[in-house]
Image 1 (cartoon, rainbow over the protein chains, first blue to last red):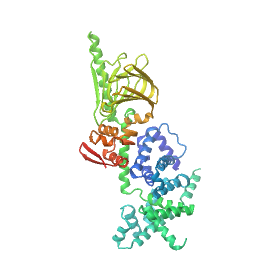
Image 2: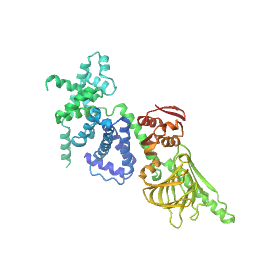
Image 3: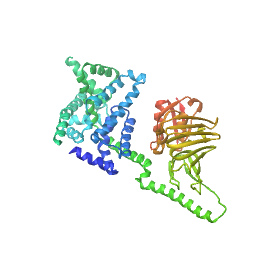
Image 4: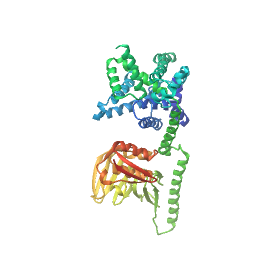
Length: 195
Length: 331
């Protein structure tokens, strides 16, 4: 079902339907941005994702999809990030930085071995999972994730030890983890049902 | 690994995904990653969840909205031809009509009068503007900021000499029989059915002609040279020397879409382009910047400050914005 809807959307875009293009943007902008943001600075991430949509619209008549639209968009952004790292690699000082090595490991992981959950339709599931968290847990998770408070600041706010704060966040993450555990599997099942 | 260490690594992972792991913790993680391939999965999946949980936050909704507006602007600049944005199309149409009528009326007038008076008409893209012009014969011209294009009022098949100051991109429909001549100073480019870019700002002291498609001939005094697609001729106005090189023409034509890509360009030249695009004066010690070369992209729809921030990462600078005057110094 999902595949069909996407191919209709793409056909409309090819025909120059601007509102279909807007719909696509709303659907994938955030996941693509969050994905690129893992690897590069915020400004570059914005550029990569905007370029990706710009090129899609500009070349819409020529583009032939061999995969789903989302796989296509993600592969473009992944490759831009990867190329960026390839270029940076030649800068001697970067090579030795551990931070750079870790990011490189991460991009290789998503390029060669696993998909990011951002590539799936996860919006509703994330909202549902947030609702499932215990009240204290969700407050702390929220402060840390969205309000940008440090663990120390959160500890002061609720009069807890830093360790306790960290335990709450770990707990929230574990619940998320369990929610998304079967994710790859369920994705395959979905495909099988469609066939 | 004992219990204590496991607990410890969980804490390090948490710090890392929250973005506040210190050097030592990062080193610990790197070693831990190399211990077992499964560890990668644990770390990056956890970080992935952390990243994904930000979706639909207020911050991201605002960002999405802003980026959509910027994307629209970008499409807007480049797609005038296709008629997506009615207002801009209207402006282009007015130019076409104005040129057409001007030419027609003159034609009718001069037909009855024996003395033919040729007037020059001028279109100007002031600083901060990029303009698109259609000439009466169908030639399509993009004028970059701070440029002027003059053409005779009786723009006929036989008389198609126009003059340019600044930068323009041409898509010409013409034949060998009725060539199209673009004059910049005493330097002429003879054109037969092509797409090409000419850049000649007097302060640059050079004229660059980049051919995208078709054929052009460079005529400079006694010098003649045919250019082929992908070639660029650079004419140095002070020494009257011409250099021919192969160029990636995308770089030289992307400005029409409000993008200017440059590779290993002098800071001096980049500042000049910024002055024209954002209509500002940049004050900087020329001697100090003489040997600074940078690569990057200018995007016309983005604020100029953002570009200084990027330049600052390549060449450490201090800059101060006072309305349209910007003072830049090396750090």
